[in-house]
View (tube, helix red, strand yellow):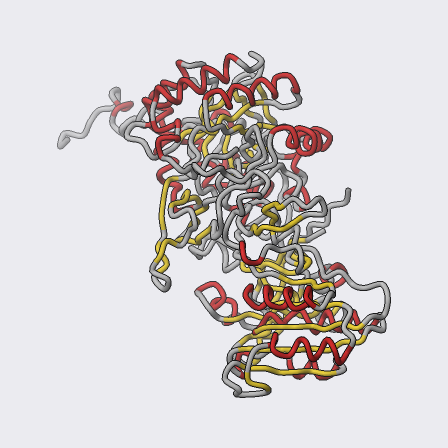
Length: 341
Length: 287
């Protein structure tokens, strides 16, 4: 297949001298930049704009057991520096996904993190078993936090016990060599507690964050703008919330692999997540603005980290959590202090 | 296969209530077919809160000339994004992704074609008419709008079509009424074999209905709100009946924007019909 991307004025700079490889549990990736579930379908469309085998991994749109039509339209509303979506997990079901999408991704040479979603703990387990028997992917992301469901009580990630029930079922049903990541919602009182619950239930890592629940009312029709009334808010508008969640979870769980996401536009935004504690980042909504964004951000991130003296991107992970820099006077104990201090 | 290119504004000219942007888009004219669309990013992400690209059907292409390849887009200034676009000046940079979507299917034989456009929905129809004429097709055109200033492409249509009928809701120009009021007569007069339509959803539903009643094939270019335009976001879906008789929620950006008029469930647009593949059951749960 030929790829015909013409980006004039986008002159490739000399590759910065930095090791961009990262680890998500047992899986090593050549780059920390991933797609975000639901913003890249199964990679095929974006591969028209950049080679998807060159980024860290493709995180596929959450797949369910059966084909699913999703919610009625309108499903989208643009908001300041963001958007609301209310797709409702439209998809072809696991079997069509394995045959059409996963097979294509493997053939293409992409690393694949499969996102799964279910209405019940059993559905998650069934999906994990089908995937275990099929193989051909690198990690699982368990979407327990999709906000676009009929009943808010169905959002497993709102409680530690329901989150843990799904995660332990999936972990049990998955090959031990495959890392299981729990994708969490920011719409909770204490995300650290939920994260801890997931890790105790067997999660190898956490994906932070899913969209945050929002709503827009059309002032002309004077009705909700979305057919589903509420939707998930994504884009740069939620980035500070996402960075906060990564920071808080990193504080509680210093060693656990984290994938950070939420409103990343460029390499600088991606670097912010890494400083907060993310081992990898997913780029989502920005793809709707720039379909080449994952490849662009990967290059920008390398330059930014290298410019700050890092020779490995892994050394930058959690760097914002480091001990306070010594006060100018602290290391000068041997120096005679001026009389007037 | 779409390309993403840095284009440059060559000109912005007014056409009634609309603006026609001519933009360089290297490589696009050679690939673009009538019915394809382009998306444009609004400013750059450091300076804008508008993160979604805007989609426009391609009105025309010029593959040669002093600017190299250019495309023409018709823009209605209806919100902050399109307002920004209509205020671009010659030389301004624009991020373009094109050509997108499936184009109109063209007949193999020189048949009689009726093109129906509503508002600036007529933007792709002159481009289409040129291709149809090249194939020796007869082309008749009906263009309508609520008022004269919202009519688009009438002069260009007159250059290329055998007959052009103009309608406005208020009678400010042409016949008073709707485009569909004149379809039956146009079909009978021209012996129409196929109808091509682009415009608001209500108009498309009516056009598809009249074509079906007349026993002829119709191709409709739908306008659904989109976030990505490239097939990843699942925003722009509508219920369409497949060759196997099953209704699916199809993406208008990649499976459209051109659909067979007899396959779109026009009355159900905006809903998930209960017999759609994967539709939720009565309790709202997925089956």
